[in-house]
Length: 295
Length: 295
Image 1: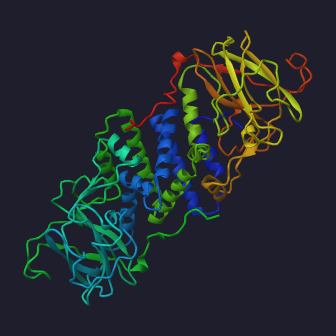
Image 2: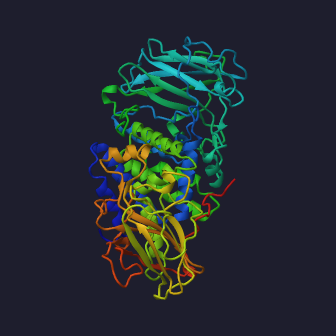
Image 3: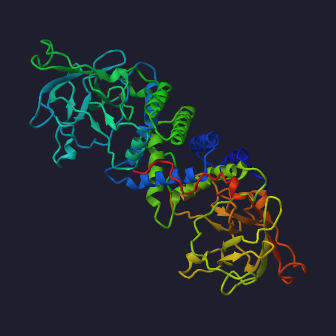
């Protein structure tokens, strides 16, 4: 035993973790402990501040339910999820469609919808044509692609915020050229849940909690890496300040005037193409893999 | 809007937090976001690993109850609380008694006990004399000092783990020379709670969850900074590997043979002196201050 100081404690902690069997888990925890200690030293963290932070994290955990994941929301408003998504997007070769955040309103079991049909059972509000093409990194269309889509209604609400019945979400099969097309309504932007600890954080930081208008997609095909992403509308006032940092230029589109060559020549058009990476290059690291061994 | 990469996202996030009104809170969050992003980039964090980590933190939060604070335990087993405590100890001038962790077994309302009386209502097991002196940084005894003490029994359990009645804890008033003295039993080491997510972490890291034998103290006096600390027994097998990093050399003592000059000449002795900092130098930063403005 020796007298510890605020620097030597770090090596003492790393030494005690040195018997970790899973080498990747050891690498993660070693780096995490070093960065946590560096953070505390850099800001000269006070005991009362540490306690306030731990109480905040406790509140975050206690706010979580099977239907609300406040910790994922926290990682989003701090930009952490975006760092991880971008690294994952840029890991392989070739330029593929960038990931955006999944968000809390995805539900399993989106109903199958025929190409050309409306996304909702009875669209209210002005309609747009939503269409595009799913291709591989060489530009070849992928006819086996599926395109799952969900979005808000004309008032900025998802179906699950209104009722039990699913609406304004569906799963499309691309045609032989990898194309998809459907009718829907303009999406509206909305606020993240502001009634929890993350809302307190956002207010304390003088930020708004808004997301710009967008439509969510999960696009996949056998033999290709699935991409979870969204298209964002450029004319939204929050396009440059998405509170969860889901927006990047390559995901932003303008609504186009009606185009005689589009699948719906009478409707304003929103065109969004996808490029998928062959899954032989899949380096996503296993979304469902537990890093920590289960006991 | 521009295309984000895994580096530029950090400045975008910091920019969105730049309107934070509380400047200290802004400093803390800016540094935290930078270190979180640096951590993710350094280890090339995968989406599945981030999700596993967020689920782990959620489990930590959900394990907390009014009687169990699993997040504080996490900060202890990662050495973070010790970094913060050490910086706080070394902040002022003069050499004062080092802090050790409070632990989960402190309860308010420890009964007053007269000097010289036993700490427990009916001591079981071999007795020791516990004594020492509370002084200021010039070495002058502090006659107004109070010494609150709590410890495990001969089986390594705290009173609150056995029964509702308080036992083996008490609050002593120092005498005119700042001295305190009492009879008690040898404390035993014990394991931190291993039935929660922190226990899973400890096992995955190949660590034991043990703390070496110790006795807890909270020592204070009007005009002096209160110190929360503990004395650790050198001959404990876990003295060099306390799972919560509470041990430092200046808090380690040997049990001494019976000493005719001690307050209890027939008993083995455990002598532990304290040095308190005058609270005009108090830079503890407010244990009860909320860092984040309440809403």
